[in-house]
Image 1 (cartoon, rainbow, N blue to C red):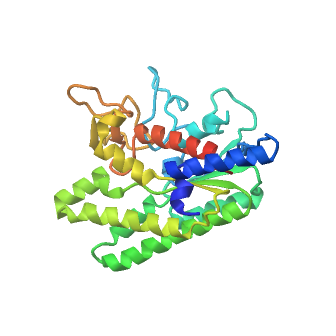
Image 2 (image 1 turned 90 degrees about the vertical axis):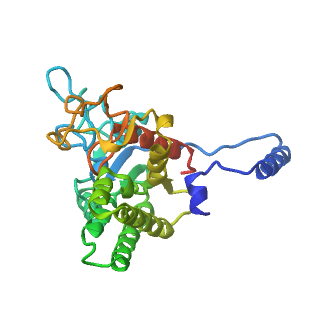
Image 3 (image 1 turned 60 degrees about the vertical axis):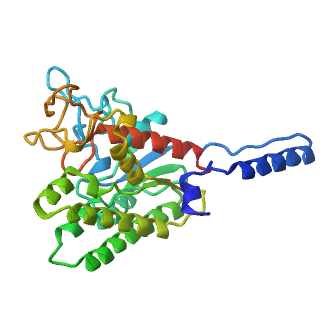
Length: 324
């Protein structure tokens, strides 16, 4: 089965749909009118691996636009990141954001700030030291953004050819780790990394060095994603692919569809770096007020809440429609 079929498991051409319908009727007739269906996979735990795009700090802050009340107290459940939206679909909570003090939270925060492809293996190893993967675990993996930035930071001291080789190897490492999680019994939702050539950081690099820099960041992001996807073992029953790169490009290209007013600049004040940024520390703009929901970027590298809402919805759709 191709990666395209994995990403869109319910996509059929009309002609094939008609054939499938006819075959289904024939099977029903041959079986005396009986029917069957694939039971939806219902996880018992959610295991979250990756970098800061999935992190909730011990005090409930996230590396995006947070929410505080009138007293300046962070309200971690009012600005959910994508894995919180996914957890909420199954009525799971994280220990890091558990305002109702629910016992034995079933969502486990294993992602770490600054993690790269090597860090992913460390996270899985650390988890496996005191626990083990179970057949009813749902795992998420979103990592690679920092690999792209690390590779870019070596340019032009190192050539693009060398950096592409390094970033491909990073993508392969992530895929192998995802495959191992699936082989151990987990169902895994794995995401591509965002196109780092669209970031405010890339725009600032273009201003200083010329627009070839944002294109380089885009190429490195694409090489990572392609290498990772090609190495994923895709049997259609254990893995679900989330297309964060496509999502971010669509949000950048047609912002109005996503109710965005700015897709080029960071919404958080530089005086409130992540994870300190909140609704009380956003830039001022004329006209429509800036929020975490109408800006694409929180800071120079990381998306605002708008992305998390969209990716969370995509994750829920994939988890519930994939034939796990």
